[in-house]
Length: 157
Image (cartoon, rainbow, N blue to C red; front, top):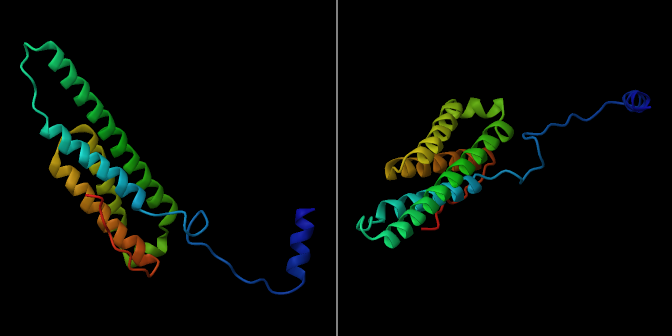
């Protein structure tokens, strides 16, 4: 039945060509979600680096310290992983070959940003966390330029 419907439509005149630039309706993609996750990982990195270990003889203080460190590390790793997921979806679902013409370093930009997400998960590096934020800002600028929009990049802190 579907074949007959298509054949009838084609027989009734020329079809208007349609296209889509992404896999979903416009408006479902936004690099802001990656930025929010990366910023949470940056915040946790700062908090970890600011902690001072207690005297090893104070078992209650050491237990509280280890609990805090483990919570911060867990959040940092979860948020860095979420940032990577958000970037990979944007890279693979939104950006199309036509965008590579305008941004020939697009693949390298995303690949390096994804690698930074991994570094932020594995390490406690303020440098890498800040580099990730800068990479996401670059992706933000490219993304909005593909939509011919000037959207200000901002952070919560």
